[in-house]
Length: 494
Image (cartoon, rainbow, N blue to C red):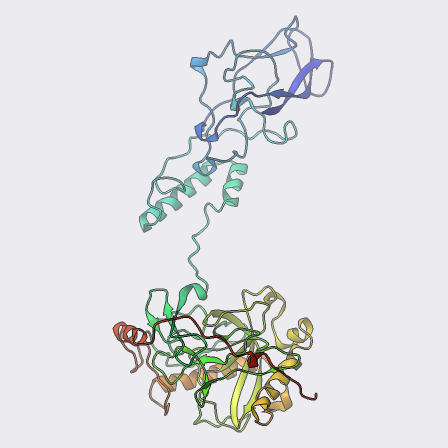
Protein backbone atom coordinates (compact mmCIF):
# COMPACT_ATOMS: atom_id res chain seq x y z
CA UNK A 1 0.00 0.00 0.00
CA UNK A 2 1.34 3.43 -0.89
CA UNK A 3 0.58 6.61 0.97
CA UNK A 4 1.30 10.12 -0.22
CA UNK A 5 3.27 11.84 2.57
CA UNK A 6 5.14 15.15 2.73
CA UNK A 7 8.93 14.97 2.75
CA UNK A 8 11.16 17.44 4.45
CA UNK A 9 14.02 19.09 2.69
CA UNK A 10 16.27 22.05 3.08
CA UNK A 11 15.43 25.46 1.81
CA UNK A 12 12.79 28.11 2.27
CA UNK A 13 9.21 27.90 1.14
CA UNK A 14 5.70 28.66 2.15
CA UNK A 15 5.53 25.61 4.45
CA UNK A 16 8.59 25.71 6.65
CA UNK A 17 9.49 24.52 10.09
CA UNK A 18 12.75 24.22 11.89
CA UNK A 19 14.54 24.03 15.12
CA UNK A 20 17.61 25.91 16.06
CA UNK A 21 17.25 28.39 13.27
CA UNK A 22 17.02 25.96 10.35
CA UNK A 23 14.08 25.84 7.98
CA UNK A 24 12.71 22.78 6.22
CA UNK A 25 10.62 22.87 3.05
CA UNK A 26 7.98 20.13 2.88
CA UNK A 27 7.72 18.35 -0.48
CA UNK A 28 5.49 15.34 -1.18
CA UNK A 29 6.68 11.84 -1.96
CA UNK A 30 5.34 8.26 -1.74
CA UNK A 31 6.20 5.90 1.08
CA UNK A 32 5.32 2.22 1.24
CA UNK A 33 2.90 0.93 3.86
CA UNK A 34 3.43 -2.81 4.35
CA UNK A 35 0.01 -3.81 5.65
CA UNK A 36 -3.48 -2.35 5.38
CA UNK A 37 -5.61 -1.86 8.45
CA UNK A 38 -9.17 -3.10 8.71
CA UNK A 39 -11.58 -0.20 9.31
CA UNK A 40 -13.64 -2.42 11.58
CA UNK A 41 -10.79 -2.49 14.12
CA UNK A 42 -10.61 1.29 14.42
CA UNK A 43 -12.07 3.33 17.24
CA UNK A 44 -13.37 6.90 17.42
CA UNK A 45 -12.10 9.70 19.60
CA UNK A 46 -8.34 9.88 19.08
CA UNK A 47 -6.05 12.81 19.13
CA UNK A 48 -3.25 13.45 16.68
CA UNK A 49 -0.11 11.30 17.16
CA UNK A 50 2.91 12.81 18.83
CA UNK A 51 5.57 14.15 16.48
CA UNK A 52 9.06 14.83 17.74
CA UNK A 53 11.10 17.41 15.92
CA UNK A 54 14.58 16.37 14.98
CA UNK A 55 17.65 18.57 15.08
CA UNK A 56 19.51 19.89 12.12
CA UNK A 57 22.53 17.61 12.57
CA UNK A 58 21.64 14.39 10.89
CA UNK A 59 18.06 13.29 10.97
CA UNK A 60 16.86 15.05 7.88
CA UNK A 61 14.90 17.71 9.71
CA UNK A 62 11.93 15.63 11.00
CA UNK A 63 11.45 12.24 12.61
CA UNK A 64 8.33 10.41 13.71
CA UNK A 65 8.18 10.19 17.46
CA UNK A 66 8.30 6.47 18.10
CA UNK A 67 10.79 7.05 20.93
CA UNK A 68 8.43 9.37 22.81
CA UNK A 69 5.34 7.20 22.27
CA UNK A 70 6.02 3.60 23.42
CA UNK A 71 3.89 0.89 21.84
CA UNK A 72 2.18 0.09 25.12
CA UNK A 73 1.16 3.75 25.54
CA UNK A 74 -0.15 4.23 22.01
CA UNK A 75 -3.29 6.37 21.77
CA UNK A 76 -6.42 4.51 20.60
CA UNK A 77 -6.92 4.28 16.86
CA UNK A 78 -9.78 6.17 15.22
CA UNK A 79 -13.05 4.33 14.71
CA UNK A 80 -15.84 4.77 12.24
CA UNK A 81 -19.60 4.24 12.37
CA UNK A 82 -20.71 0.68 11.91
CA UNK A 83 -22.18 1.48 8.49
CA UNK A 84 -18.60 1.94 7.16
CA UNK A 85 -17.32 -1.43 8.41
CA UNK A 86 -16.26 -3.72 5.62
CA UNK A 87 -15.58 -0.84 3.20
CA UNK A 88 -13.00 1.89 2.97
CA UNK A 89 -13.67 4.65 5.51
CA UNK A 90 -14.36 8.13 4.14
CA UNK A 91 -11.22 9.63 5.68
CA UNK A 92 -7.95 8.48 7.27
CA UNK A 93 -6.61 9.68 10.59
CA UNK A 94 -7.37 12.80 12.49
CA UNK A 95 -4.15 14.78 12.64
CA UNK A 96 -2.22 16.89 10.15
CA UNK A 97 -0.25 15.40 7.26
CA UNK A 98 2.79 13.84 8.89
CA UNK A 99 6.33 13.90 7.52
CA UNK A 100 8.08 10.64 6.80
CA UNK A 101 11.19 9.37 8.45
CA UNK A 102 12.70 6.50 10.40
CA UNK A 103 11.38 4.93 13.55
CA UNK A 104 9.39 1.95 14.70
CA UNK A 105 5.82 1.29 13.71
CA UNK A 106 4.26 3.09 16.63
CA UNK A 107 1.23 5.32 16.73
CA UNK A 108 3.07 7.97 14.76
CA UNK A 109 4.47 5.53 12.22
CA UNK A 110 3.43 5.55 8.58
CA UNK A 111 2.15 2.02 9.25
CA UNK A 112 -0.46 3.37 11.61
CA UNK A 113 -3.77 4.55 10.10
CA UNK A 114 -3.68 7.47 12.50
CA UNK A 115 -0.66 8.79 10.62
CA UNK A 116 -2.16 8.48 7.14
CA UNK A 117 -3.19 11.67 5.36
CA UNK A 118 -6.71 12.35 4.04
CA UNK A 119 -7.77 11.56 0.49
CA UNK A 120 -6.26 13.73 -2.23
CA UNK A 121 -3.20 13.79 -0.01
CA UNK A 122 -1.77 17.16 0.73
CA UNK A 123 -4.46 19.04 -1.23
CA UNK A 124 -7.10 19.45 1.44
CA UNK A 125 -7.11 20.00 5.15
CA UNK A 126 -7.61 16.81 7.17
CA UNK A 127 -10.89 16.00 8.87
CA UNK A 128 -10.69 16.46 12.67
CA UNK A 129 -11.41 13.57 14.99
CA UNK A 130 -14.83 13.17 16.56
CA UNK A 131 -15.26 14.67 19.97
CA UNK A 132 -17.06 11.59 21.35
CA UNK A 133 -17.13 7.93 20.44
CA UNK A 134 -20.00 6.62 18.37
CA UNK A 135 -22.80 5.43 20.69
CA UNK A 136 -23.53 1.73 20.53
CA UNK A 137 -27.31 1.55 20.23
CA UNK A 138 -29.27 -1.57 19.23
CA UNK A 139 -31.18 -1.33 15.99
CA UNK A 140 -28.40 0.10 13.83
CA UNK A 141 -27.82 -1.40 10.38
CA UNK A 142 -25.61 -4.45 10.77
CA UNK A 143 -26.22 -4.69 14.51
CA UNK A 144 -28.15 -7.11 16.62
CA UNK A 145 -31.08 -4.78 17.27
CA UNK A 146 -34.57 -5.64 16.13
CA UNK A 147 -35.02 -3.61 12.97
CA UNK A 148 -38.20 -5.41 12.09
CA UNK A 149 -40.13 -4.46 15.20
CA UNK A 150 -41.56 -0.94 15.69
CA UNK A 151 -39.40 -0.53 18.80
CA UNK A 152 -36.28 -1.55 16.88
CA UNK A 153 -37.07 0.88 14.07
CA UNK A 154 -37.60 3.68 16.58
CA UNK A 155 -34.29 2.95 18.30
CA UNK A 156 -32.57 2.85 14.93
CA UNK A 157 -33.91 6.28 14.02
CA UNK A 158 -32.87 7.67 17.41
CA UNK A 159 -29.38 6.22 17.00
CA UNK A 160 -29.05 7.66 13.51
CA UNK A 161 -30.08 11.08 14.80
CA UNK A 162 -27.52 10.85 17.64
CA UNK A 163 -24.74 9.99 15.22
CA UNK A 164 -25.72 12.80 12.87
CA UNK A 165 -25.52 15.28 15.75
CA UNK A 166 -22.10 13.98 16.83
CA UNK A 167 -20.47 13.97 13.42
CA UNK A 168 -18.63 16.94 11.93
CA UNK A 169 -19.71 18.39 8.63
CA UNK A 170 -18.10 15.92 6.21
CA UNK A 171 -19.02 12.82 8.17
CA UNK A 172 -22.61 14.02 8.45
CA UNK A 173 -22.74 14.60 4.72
CA UNK A 174 -21.40 11.11 4.03
CA UNK A 175 -23.95 9.46 6.29
CA UNK A 176 -26.76 11.50 4.77
CA UNK A 177 -25.68 10.31 1.34
CA UNK A 178 -26.09 6.72 2.57
CA UNK A 179 -29.68 7.45 3.59
CA UNK A 180 -29.23 7.82 7.37
CA UNK A 181 -31.65 10.15 9.06
CA UNK A 182 -34.28 9.86 6.32
CA UNK A 183 -37.81 8.63 7.08
CA UNK A 184 -38.43 5.02 6.05
CA UNK A 185 -40.08 4.45 2.70
CA UNK A 186 -43.39 2.71 3.20
CA UNK A 187 -45.12 3.22 -0.15
CA UNK A 188 -45.68 0.27 -2.45
CA UNK A 189 -46.29 0.30 -6.16
CA UNK A 190 -49.79 -0.54 -7.33
CA UNK A 191 -48.60 -3.88 -8.72
CA UNK A 192 -46.81 -4.79 -5.47
CA UNK A 193 -50.12 -4.48 -3.60
CA UNK A 194 -51.90 -7.01 -5.83
CA UNK A 195 -51.25 -10.41 -7.31
CA UNK A 196 -52.97 -12.81 -9.67
CA UNK A 197 -53.70 -16.53 -9.73
CA UNK A 198 -54.30 -18.48 -12.92
CA UNK A 199 -56.94 -21.18 -13.12
CA UNK A 200 -57.84 -23.41 -16.03
CA UNK A 201 -56.03 -23.81 -19.34
CA UNK A 202 -54.62 -20.73 -21.14
CA UNK A 203 -55.94 -20.18 -24.67
CA UNK A 204 -59.14 -22.02 -23.80
CA UNK A 205 -62.65 -20.95 -22.72
CA UNK A 206 -62.12 -22.13 -19.12
CA UNK A 207 -59.07 -19.94 -18.45
CA UNK A 208 -59.49 -17.44 -15.58
CA UNK A 209 -57.16 -14.95 -13.90
CA UNK A 210 -58.19 -14.19 -10.30
CA UNK A 211 -56.88 -11.34 -8.18
CA UNK A 212 -55.43 -11.16 -4.66
CA UNK A 213 -54.47 -8.21 -2.51
CA UNK A 214 -51.34 -7.87 -0.36
CA UNK A 215 -53.04 -9.73 2.52
CA UNK A 216 -53.66 -12.76 0.31
CA UNK A 217 -57.43 -12.18 0.10
CA UNK A 218 -59.16 -13.03 -3.15
CA UNK A 219 -60.83 -9.87 -4.43
CA UNK A 220 -62.84 -8.54 -7.34
CA UNK A 221 -60.75 -6.30 -9.63
CA UNK A 222 -63.96 -4.64 -10.79
CA UNK A 223 -65.17 -3.63 -7.31
CA UNK A 224 -62.38 -4.01 -4.72
CA UNK A 225 -59.46 -2.23 -6.39
CA UNK A 226 -59.92 1.52 -5.79
CA UNK A 227 -60.38 3.83 -8.75
CA UNK A 228 -58.16 6.54 -7.32
CA UNK A 229 -54.50 5.57 -6.93
CA UNK A 230 -53.34 5.82 -3.33
CA UNK A 231 -56.84 5.34 -1.90
CA UNK A 232 -57.47 2.68 0.71
CA UNK A 233 -59.14 -0.54 -0.34
CA UNK A 234 -61.14 -1.15 2.79
CA UNK A 235 -63.65 1.66 2.98
CA UNK A 236 -67.31 2.33 2.52
CA UNK A 237 -68.76 3.54 -0.75
CA UNK A 238 -68.38 7.34 -0.72
CA UNK A 239 -71.71 9.08 -0.43
CA UNK A 240 -70.57 12.33 -2.04
CA UNK A 241 -69.15 12.89 -5.47
CA UNK A 242 -65.39 13.38 -5.62
CA UNK A 243 -64.20 16.96 -6.06
CA UNK A 244 -60.80 16.05 -7.46
CA UNK A 245 -59.55 17.70 -10.64
CA UNK A 246 -57.39 16.41 -13.47
CA UNK A 247 -54.29 18.08 -12.01
CA UNK A 248 -54.65 16.34 -8.64
CA UNK A 249 -55.67 12.76 -9.30
CA UNK A 250 -54.11 9.53 -10.56
CA UNK A 251 -56.02 6.37 -11.35
CA UNK A 252 -55.48 2.62 -11.09
CA UNK A 253 -55.71 0.80 -14.40
CA UNK A 254 -56.29 -2.95 -14.76
CA UNK A 255 -54.40 -4.24 -17.80
CA UNK A 256 -56.48 -6.77 -19.70
CA UNK A 257 -54.64 -7.00 -23.03
CA UNK A 258 -50.88 -6.34 -23.38
CA UNK A 259 -49.76 -4.41 -26.43
CA UNK A 260 -49.05 -6.37 -29.66
CA UNK A 261 -51.26 -9.29 -28.55
CA UNK A 262 -54.55 -10.39 -30.15
CA UNK A 263 -56.48 -12.37 -27.53
CA UNK A 264 -59.53 -10.36 -26.46
CA UNK A 265 -59.10 -10.60 -22.70
CA UNK A 266 -61.63 -8.80 -20.50
CA UNK A 267 -62.99 -8.55 -16.98
CA UNK A 268 -65.79 -11.10 -16.61
CA UNK A 269 -68.46 -8.74 -15.26
CA UNK A 270 -71.08 -11.52 -15.16
CA UNK A 271 -69.05 -13.93 -13.00
CA UNK A 272 -68.43 -13.88 -9.22
CA UNK A 273 -65.23 -12.02 -8.29
CA UNK A 274 -64.98 -10.84 -11.93
CA UNK A 275 -61.78 -12.60 -13.06
CA UNK A 276 -60.13 -11.83 -16.38
CA UNK A 277 -61.07 -14.28 -19.13
CA UNK A 278 -60.89 -14.47 -22.91
CA UNK A 279 -64.08 -13.38 -24.63
CA UNK A 280 -65.94 -15.96 -26.68
CA UNK A 281 -68.58 -15.88 -29.41
CA UNK A 282 -70.60 -18.98 -30.23
CA UNK A 283 -68.17 -21.03 -28.14
CA UNK A 284 -65.06 -19.83 -29.98
CA UNK A 285 -62.30 -17.66 -28.53
CA UNK A 286 -62.19 -14.13 -29.87
CA UNK A 287 -59.07 -12.45 -31.27
CA UNK A 288 -58.76 -8.99 -32.78
CA UNK A 289 -57.61 -8.90 -36.38
CA UNK A 290 -54.28 -7.48 -37.54
CA UNK A 291 -55.14 -4.49 -39.70
CA UNK A 292 -52.10 -3.39 -41.68
CA UNK A 293 -49.74 -1.97 -40.52
CA UNK A 294 -50.78 -2.84 -36.95
CA UNK A 295 -50.26 -6.05 -34.96
CA UNK A 296 -52.93 -6.79 -32.38
CA UNK A 297 -53.71 -4.05 -29.86
CA UNK A 298 -51.51 -1.00 -30.39
CA UNK A 299 -51.55 0.03 -26.71
CA UNK A 300 -51.81 -1.70 -23.37
CA UNK A 301 -55.58 -2.05 -23.16
CA UNK A 302 -57.62 -2.33 -20.00
CA UNK A 303 -60.19 -0.71 -17.73
CA UNK A 304 -60.57 1.53 -14.69
CA UNK A 305 -61.96 -0.26 -11.60
CA UNK A 306 -65.06 1.02 -9.81
CA UNK A 307 -66.49 2.52 -13.01
CA UNK A 308 -69.49 1.42 -15.04
CA UNK A 309 -71.03 2.67 -18.26
CA UNK A 310 -74.71 2.40 -17.37
CA UNK A 311 -76.81 0.80 -20.14
CA UNK A 312 -79.89 2.45 -18.60
CA UNK A 313 -78.53 5.97 -19.10
CA UNK A 314 -78.47 7.76 -22.45
CA UNK A 315 -75.34 9.84 -22.80
CA UNK A 316 -75.94 13.51 -23.60
CA UNK A 317 -72.89 13.64 -25.87
CA UNK A 318 -73.28 10.48 -27.93
CA UNK A 319 -77.04 10.05 -27.69
CA UNK A 320 -76.49 6.35 -26.89
CA UNK A 321 -76.61 4.27 -23.73
CA UNK A 322 -73.57 2.79 -22.03
CA UNK A 323 -72.06 -0.56 -23.01
CA UNK A 324 -72.53 -2.19 -19.55
CA UNK A 325 -68.76 -2.44 -18.89
CA UNK A 326 -66.11 -0.59 -16.89
CA UNK A 327 -64.67 2.36 -18.79
CA UNK A 328 -61.86 1.38 -21.16
CA UNK A 329 -58.28 2.70 -21.07
CA UNK A 330 -55.57 2.83 -23.74
CA UNK A 331 -52.19 3.12 -21.99
CA UNK A 332 -49.76 4.60 -24.51
CA UNK A 333 -46.46 4.27 -22.64
CA UNK A 334 -43.35 2.58 -23.99
CA UNK A 335 -43.62 -0.51 -21.74
CA UNK A 336 -45.41 -3.70 -22.73
CA UNK A 337 -47.50 -4.61 -19.67
CA UNK A 338 -48.84 -7.97 -18.50
CA UNK A 339 -52.42 -9.13 -18.30
CA UNK A 340 -53.67 -8.55 -14.75
CA UNK A 341 -51.09 -5.87 -14.00
CA UNK A 342 -52.28 -2.87 -11.98
CA UNK A 343 -50.77 0.35 -13.31
CA UNK A 344 -50.98 3.81 -11.80
CA UNK A 345 -51.83 6.14 -14.70
CA UNK A 346 -52.42 9.80 -15.38
CA UNK A 347 -55.22 10.68 -17.75
CA UNK A 348 -54.40 12.60 -20.93
CA UNK A 349 -57.67 12.69 -22.88
CA UNK A 350 -60.64 10.71 -24.14
CA UNK A 351 -62.19 9.50 -27.39
CA UNK A 352 -65.98 9.06 -27.71
CA UNK A 353 -66.56 5.83 -29.64
CA UNK A 354 -70.01 4.61 -30.67
CA UNK A 355 -69.64 0.83 -30.96
CA UNK A 356 -72.65 -0.97 -32.45
CA UNK A 357 -74.97 1.74 -31.14
CA UNK A 358 -73.50 1.84 -27.60
CA UNK A 359 -71.43 4.54 -25.93
CA UNK A 360 -67.91 3.23 -25.38
CA UNK A 361 -65.55 5.88 -23.99
CA UNK A 362 -61.83 5.28 -24.56
CA UNK A 363 -59.58 6.97 -22.01
CA UNK A 364 -56.07 7.85 -23.22
CA UNK A 365 -53.56 7.55 -20.36
CA UNK A 366 -49.92 6.85 -19.59
CA UNK A 367 -48.36 4.99 -16.67
CA UNK A 368 -46.64 7.30 -14.21
CA UNK A 369 -43.66 4.90 -14.07
CA UNK A 370 -43.12 5.15 -17.82
CA UNK A 371 -39.94 6.95 -18.99
CA UNK A 372 -42.03 9.18 -21.28
CA UNK A 373 -44.53 10.22 -18.60
CA UNK A 374 -42.47 13.23 -17.49
CA UNK A 375 -42.93 14.82 -20.93
CA UNK A 376 -46.57 13.94 -21.62
CA UNK A 377 -49.26 15.66 -19.55
CA UNK A 378 -52.17 16.29 -21.93
CA UNK A 379 -53.53 15.14 -25.26
CA UNK A 380 -51.56 17.84 -27.10
CA UNK A 381 -48.33 16.42 -25.67
CA UNK A 382 -49.22 13.08 -27.27
CA UNK A 383 -49.38 14.76 -30.68
CA UNK A 384 -46.04 16.43 -30.01
CA UNK A 385 -44.06 13.48 -28.66
CA UNK A 386 -45.87 10.61 -30.45
CA UNK A 387 -46.89 12.00 -33.84
CA UNK A 388 -49.36 9.79 -35.68
CA UNK A 389 -50.32 7.74 -32.62
CA UNK A 390 -53.73 9.37 -32.11
CA UNK A 391 -54.56 9.08 -35.82
CA UNK A 392 -53.62 5.39 -35.71
CA UNK A 393 -55.87 4.97 -32.66
CA UNK A 394 -58.88 6.37 -34.53
CA UNK A 395 -58.16 4.15 -37.53
CA UNK A 396 -57.81 1.08 -35.32
CA UNK A 397 -61.15 1.59 -33.55
CA UNK A 398 -62.90 2.45 -36.82
CA UNK A 399 -61.89 -0.76 -38.57
CA UNK A 400 -61.19 -3.45 -35.96
CA UNK A 401 -64.57 -5.17 -36.34
CA UNK A 402 -64.75 -4.99 -40.13
CA UNK A 403 -62.87 -8.31 -40.65
CA UNK A 404 -65.72 -9.97 -38.68
CA UNK A 405 -68.25 -8.69 -41.22
CA UNK A 406 -69.48 -5.74 -39.13
CA UNK A 407 -69.74 -2.09 -40.21
CA UNK A 408 -67.20 0.56 -39.33
CA UNK A 409 -67.56 2.23 -35.94
CA UNK A 410 -68.28 5.93 -35.69
CA UNK A 411 -67.25 8.63 -33.22
CA UNK A 412 -68.78 11.60 -31.44
CA UNK A 413 -67.17 15.02 -31.92
CA UNK A 414 -66.20 13.88 -35.46
CA UNK A 415 -63.42 11.76 -34.00
CA UNK A 416 -61.86 14.61 -32.04
CA UNK A 417 -60.00 13.78 -28.83
CA UNK A 418 -61.03 15.74 -25.76
CA UNK A 419 -58.51 16.88 -23.13
CA UNK A 420 -57.82 15.53 -19.67
CA UNK A 421 -60.29 17.77 -17.82
CA UNK A 422 -63.15 16.49 -19.96
CA UNK A 423 -61.87 12.93 -19.55
CA UNK A 424 -61.77 13.16 -15.75
CA UNK A 425 -65.38 14.37 -15.72
CA UNK A 426 -66.41 11.35 -17.77
CA UNK A 427 -64.55 9.05 -15.35
CA UNK A 428 -66.26 10.65 -12.36
CA UNK A 429 -69.67 10.14 -13.99
CA UNK A 430 -69.00 6.44 -14.57
CA UNK A 431 -67.78 6.18 -10.98
CA UNK A 432 -71.15 7.55 -9.82
CA UNK A 433 -72.96 4.95 -11.93
CA UNK A 434 -70.85 2.24 -10.29
CA UNK A 435 -71.73 3.50 -6.80
CA UNK A 436 -75.42 3.43 -7.69
CA UNK A 437 -74.94 -0.13 -8.91
CA UNK A 438 -73.41 -1.26 -5.60
CA UNK A 439 -76.09 0.61 -3.60
CA UNK A 440 -78.84 -1.20 -5.57
CA UNK A 441 -80.11 2.14 -6.84
CA UNK A 442 -80.09 0.97 -10.45
CA UNK A 443 -80.73 -2.25 -12.29
CA UNK A 444 -77.45 -4.01 -12.95
CA UNK A 445 -79.02 -6.84 -14.90
CA UNK A 446 -76.59 -9.75 -15.11
CA UNK A 447 -73.66 -7.81 -13.57
CA UNK A 448 -72.13 -9.62 -10.58
CA UNK A 449 -71.45 -7.18 -7.75
CA UNK A 450 -69.88 -9.63 -5.27
CA UNK A 451 -66.95 -8.00 -3.48
CA UNK A 452 -64.81 -8.54 -0.40
CA UNK A 453 -63.57 -5.13 0.70
CA UNK A 454 -66.33 -2.57 0.00
CA UNK A 455 -67.85 -2.70 3.46
CA UNK A 456 -70.81 -0.43 2.67
CA UNK A 457 -72.05 -2.68 -0.09
CA UNK A 458 -74.89 -5.18 0.38
CA UNK A 459 -72.98 -7.50 -1.98
CA UNK A 460 -69.96 -7.87 0.32
CA UNK A 461 -69.01 -11.52 0.92
CA UNK A 462 -66.65 -13.27 3.32
CA UNK A 463 -63.08 -14.32 2.59
CA UNK A 464 -64.13 -17.97 2.84
CA UNK A 465 -66.81 -17.52 0.18
CA UNK A 466 -64.33 -15.81 -2.14
CA UNK A 467 -61.76 -18.57 -1.61
CA UNK A 468 -64.30 -21.28 -2.34
CA UNK A 469 -65.17 -19.61 -5.66
CA UNK A 470 -61.54 -19.63 -6.76
CA UNK A 471 -60.92 -23.19 -5.57
CA UNK A 472 -63.95 -24.42 -7.48
CA UNK A 473 -62.42 -23.22 -10.77
CA UNK A 474 -60.38 -25.72 -12.83
CA UNK A 475 -56.78 -26.19 -11.72
CA UNK A 476 -54.13 -24.52 -13.89
CA UNK A 477 -52.62 -26.65 -16.65
CA UNK A 478 -50.47 -26.03 -19.72
CA UNK A 479 -52.06 -23.93 -22.42
CA UNK A 480 -53.24 -24.87 -25.89
CA UNK A 481 -51.40 -23.60 -28.99
CA UNK A 482 -52.82 -20.54 -30.72
CA UNK A 483 -54.17 -20.96 -34.24
CA UNK A 484 -51.87 -19.58 -37.00
CA UNK A 485 -54.85 -17.69 -38.42
CA UNK A 486 -54.47 -15.17 -35.60
CA UNK A 487 -51.36 -13.80 -37.36
CA UNK A 488 -53.19 -13.04 -40.63
CA UNK A 489 -53.07 -9.46 -41.91
CA UNK A 490 -56.02 -7.49 -43.29
CA UNK A 491 -55.77 -4.56 -45.68
CA UNK A 492 -58.30 -1.77 -46.07
CA UNK A 493 -58.24 1.46 -48.07
CA UNK A 494 -57.42 4.59 -46.12
